[in-house]
Length: 122
Length: 110
Image (cartoon, rainbow over all chains, first blue to last red):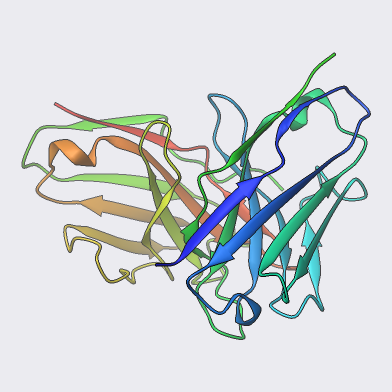
């Protein structure tokens, strides 16, 4: 069955860096756009970043632009989020999510991972 | 860009119907038919319930329906069941390859 599994979360000091991974299985990863979405403790969902199926386009929320980088390795069926210059307000569960359209962009998420917690604290 | 506006909470009795609103602007909800809705139970990942304003993914109960009028999208749940108690989030494409979520609505089934 289709599955997304995030990893790489943990505790990091303000100003530090962390790289999240999302391993995909059960579908042709290289055919779908992917996203990162986060949720601060007790708060709502926030879209973070998007990457086209072939990695040719990447877009970011203003809150992370210039600090976070989304990437993918289609040969490894894996999505990444490199997070630099981390702030306390970046503390959240980070979910990876899959777009529904093959070789296109539907701008909605039909499959989510279980998330990985990132805590930015000294 | 500001988050879409949802009521913080709604409630309804078993078997009744409820509607959750999601208000945006003419730059997001009002101009694009790319509104989706997600259900999230505590400690779980969100689940897609509605996409493209009113389309329902296979496997989602037909008790869930979506609509849009002007800058406001709505999610209606009919025949409320205990398992519908959850948080619900709307999401809209907002142009320039960006997405906006609503603040979320906590549904309580009485």
